[in-house]
Image 1 (spheres, helix red, strand yellow):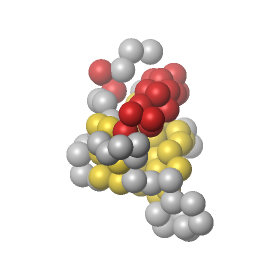
Image 2: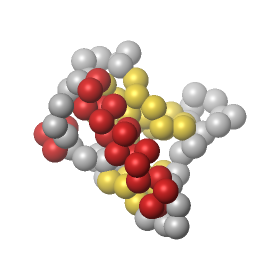
Image 3: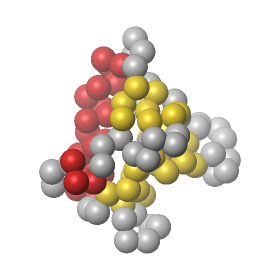
Image 4: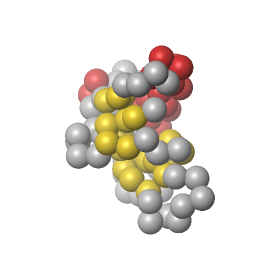
Length: 83
């Protein structure tokens, strides 16, 4: 599934999509590739809370089936996600 980053600067079909809270005050959603080093670790979006990040991951999970035939998921802005 293709995903476009929140800032629209990255378009990726990364294998692994995950949240990470160890970088600063924001919870980030990142992606990587299975079997590739940490050099391939892209920030897709940043949210003010873990709950918002997990909600976006839930949205992605629900849409994976629909997007298997093609399409792009646009990461929403922080203020577009209700906690």
